[in-house]
Image 1: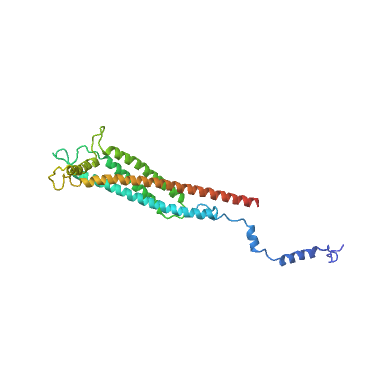
Image 2 (image 1 turned 120 degrees about the vertical axis):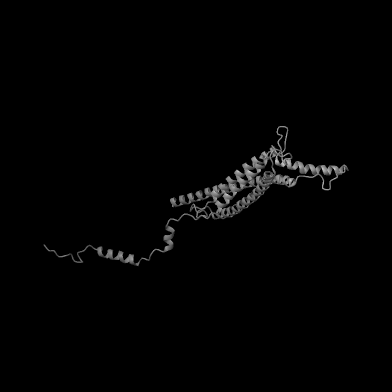
Length: 287
């Protein structure tokens, strides 16, 4: 028996030459271009204008959304500032009337009081308290919306703004009819309010003076019938305060519409992003 290895003539034909040819071929093959491999990799999620999600709608939808959202944001700021300004004016008017009443009110021990002993201050409070609440609610919204955050809170801002506007709307719908119903005495309610009492003197005196002049009745007073000091201004402030609350009511209606439009816009864009990304994933699965 011989332990000698088989010679090259005895080896199977093509065994070593095949291995050397394959290794040589691998070394000579050029590397796959990056452009080819890049298209073979699954695409990352589409970019979006929302930081909550990597999914996006089409470029046209996203650009339109950004423009509309920017407009709605500044509209919310403007409406909030106008509501605060109008409510502050109403609060100032009603507060001054109530303050003057508290300063000039005397007890029953005085023989000539300036105000009726059972004067009704509820109509004034019906303007004062809702105006203060509306100011606080809108200031809270502004502070919340101006706090910097790395996340997109556009939907939350719209919800908070709509809730604040709805709260102000409900308060105005309560304050204005309540004030109107209790301002002037009637058969079922004989109590005078601060507005009716002050306006009775100021309007009555001016009406008497004008009627006397039209009838050529001599009035031996150079300034006409005297009116208690400040009553004319208090009457005007009471009326202006109600007018400002009516303005707040109109602004709150517009604010509710703007808040609702913002919520609908966010909901619509969320559906569009979800639908497009679902179609994008479906296309990747098919390919």
